[in-house]
Image (cartoon, rainbow, N blue to C red; front, side, top):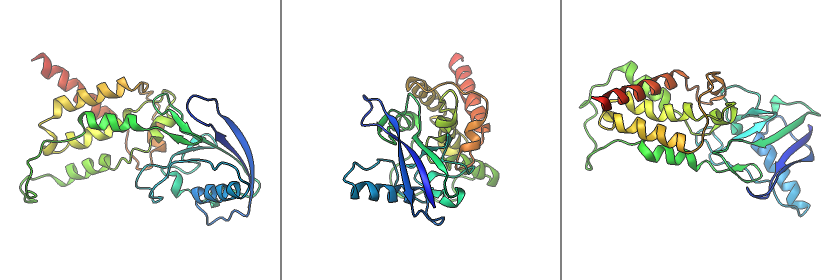
Amino acid sequence: MKLNLKVWRQENSAQKGKLVDYELDGVTTHMSFLEMMDMLNERLIQLGERVIEFDHDCREGICGQCGLMINGRAHGPLANTTTCQLHMRSFKDGDTIYVEPFRAKAFPILRDLKIDRSSFDRIISSGGFISASTGSAPEANAIPIGHQQAEDAFDVAACIGCGACVATCKNSSAALFTAAKIVHLALLPQGKLEEETRVNAMVGQMNAEDFGHCSNTEACEVECPQHISVLSIARMNYEWQKSALLRKD
């Protein structure tokens, strides 16, 4: 395939960026999107030009490091798929593809397609933990947990923190990400000790990071690679309201 690529190039967060046109020939349908970007970078190296920087790590849809706006959609045209899992068979010969970074005030661009997602790290560190005694692992059956309860907790714990929910939300809200990190602990007995302080600390940190408010359009759920349900946002709001009532008591 021969593709016409329009890729966002930006030297650093202080300078303005722009879309730069590239023509790339020899792309096969078996390539992943990131392998196609690797191929483009190899061509740029041969031409003595600076390569295009983008985030990636596992390339297996697990780590959440990859994340690009592809033709205006987070992670590309396929629903519930990470950028690294997107293959070039989703495009056709002669296509024009726009490649841009995730855009949000809380995700400043570092260079080209690389963004700073440390705001997510600060949300997690503010309360995404439990108190546990050191020593050997507890006996597996010491704390009985119902099957459905465990399944529900695992469903939200599957969040990989890629940021697609923020990038696709018209308000750049991190409500789905924050809710996933709060709810998976709220559903388990191990998370009860910090239940009240956790939701207040993490929601407070989310607001401090300048993420927008939830838009209630559910676009985040559509683009989430792990199918995290917006019902987790409702549960987060419940936990927050409950903590407010407990503080009044």
